[in-house]
Amino acid sequence: MKIINVQCYEVVVPVHAGRANSAAYGPAVFDETPKIILEARTDEEILGLGEMPRGIGEGALRTALGRLAGVDIERICFQEPPLVDLSANDMFAHEHPQRPNRLTERFFGAHADIGVHALLLDLLGKKLGVPVFVLLGGAYRDRVKVDYWMGRMTSEDSAQVCRAAKESGYRGVKCKCALEDDNVERAEAVREACGADFKMTFDPNGRFYRPGEAIPMLRRLAAVGNLGCVEDPFPREHLDWFCLLRQQGIVPVALHTNYNHTFLEAVRLGACDFVNLFDLPWNVRAAGSVAWLAGLPSWHASGVDLGILEALYLHVCAATKSMTRPSDIFGRAIRQHNLITDALPVADGTVAVPQGPGLGVELDRAALDRYTKRRFTVNL
Image 1 (spheres, rainbow, N blue to C red):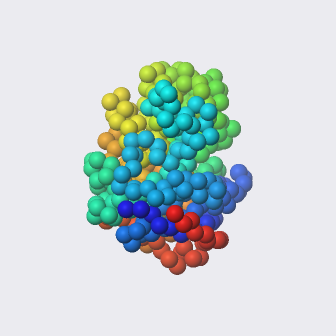
Image 2 (image 1 turned 90 degrees about the vertical axis):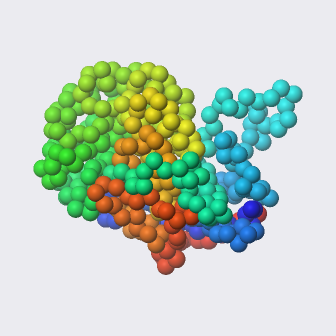
Image 3 (image 1 turned 30 degrees about the horizontal axis):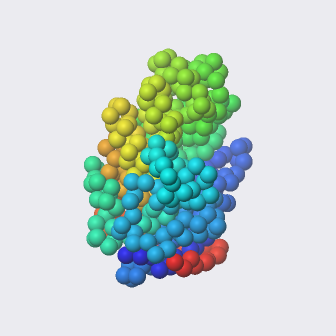
C-alpha cells in the first residue's frame, strides 16, 4: 500500500476565553501557532488522517512526506525512525559505509514527525481492519485516565476553572506555574472548590529554579492536602536536584522526558517517582516498558492538541503497561473544537479508547472548513 497524495489543511483553532491563563498573566499564545491536518489517499483508495504538532511548517512536512514516495508502508520498519533524513549528516549520511553505522546506539529526535506516524498507523489499521492499539501490541485498558489542564491562573480563576472541570468529569488538573506565583493560595482555593481528592500536578517547566528556593514553598504546598505531584521542578540538566528533592519526602517528583539518555540517567539515579512521556508511539512504548521495570508509573504528554493526535495518544496509553497516571489529553476542553466528529468525552476522569479501525476517529468537515486558513496538496 502506497500513498498517492496528501491533502493538507493549515488550521488555527483558538482557545476558549479564560480557559488557559488569567488576565494577569497575559493571553495564551500557543493557539495562534498553526497546526497542519493531514488526509492521505493510497493506491488502494484508503483514506488516513494525521495531525502535525503546532509549529511544524510546510517545508518540514514536505520533507517528511517526501521520504514516503513510492514506499510500501506495510514494509516500513517502525523500530527505527523511518522519516529521519540523514543525507546531510556528516556522521551517518552514507547508506553503505565501509564500516557500518551503529545507529541503534544513538537517539534521534524524530517526534516532530509524530503527525506523519499517526497518518501511517491510521492507514495500516484501516487496511488490516484493527485499531491502532493492536498494532502497538494490544491494549492493557479500554479507558485512559486523563486530567484537566490550565496555564498560570489566579487563585480565584483556578477555583472557578477546576470546579467546572470536576463537573464535566475530570478528577484532577495539571497547572502551569512558577516560583513567583501564589501556588499555596491557588491549591487552597482549588481544594475549597473541589475537595482534597481533586489532585493537582504543578508543572513549572523548571521554574522552581533551585532546591533552596523551592523546598520551603513545596512544604507549605504539600500541607494543603491536594498536591498530586510536581513535574519538572528544576531544569532537567540538574537531575541531582531532582534526587535531592525526592530525598526530602515532601511530594512525588515527575520528569517530563522522551526516550533518550536523560530518561535512562534519571532511572539510574532514581531522580523521579513518575515520568511524563512524549515521543513517537513506539519510542513511548519502549520508554514505558523501561518505566514499568523501574517501578515508575507514567503518563502521556500532549501539546494542547486536536482530536487526531489525542486519539493517537489514547491508543498509546492503552498499549503501554506503565501508563496508569492521568495523561494531559484535554484539547477540546481548552480549544473551541477538536476537528473530529467524536468529542472524546470524559467520564469519571477517563476517556474511552476508540475501537474502530486505525485511529478510530473521523474529521468534522464543517469544523475543518471553519478553522482552515489555507490548503495545499503533497503528491507522492
